[in-house]
Amino acid sequence: MATIALTRTDRNSVNGAILLTWEALGDADSGAPFALPFAADITVQAIGTFGSATVRLQGSNDGVNWHAMTQKGGTTTLGLTSAGVHSVNENPAYIRPATVGGTGTDVDVIVAIHARYAKVSY
Image (cartoon, rainbow, N blue to C red; front, side, top):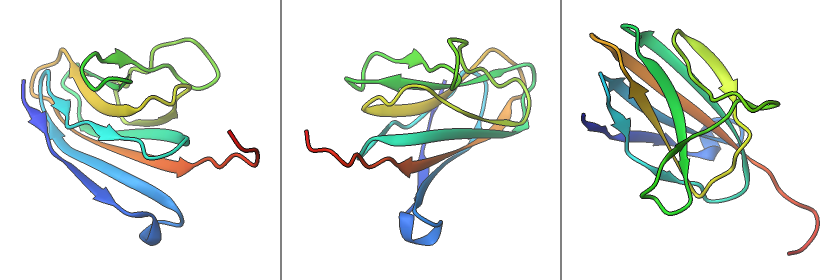
């Protein structure tokens, strides 16, 4: 169970999106957390060798207690068991990927974060 470092690509290089990449998540690994700087649309992509593992995007508001996020438009927990791309419903303070189960897992997780700006004041 390792904590995998993330690489961040800033908004100026990807048409306004922040890209986060965690490379080579293995069996039962989690990614280093990222604090979301604003309300955002979050889309996760996973690629690589899954080795029967499930990749989940987790959210937390305190950075300590983590919970699986749900697929956009429903209540089903987001769980990728093969390469794919999905958006999520929640917009927590922190996000990270995590692998559950599997053997011989080597998965890269890429998250695109697109800022959502409200036109009304708080």
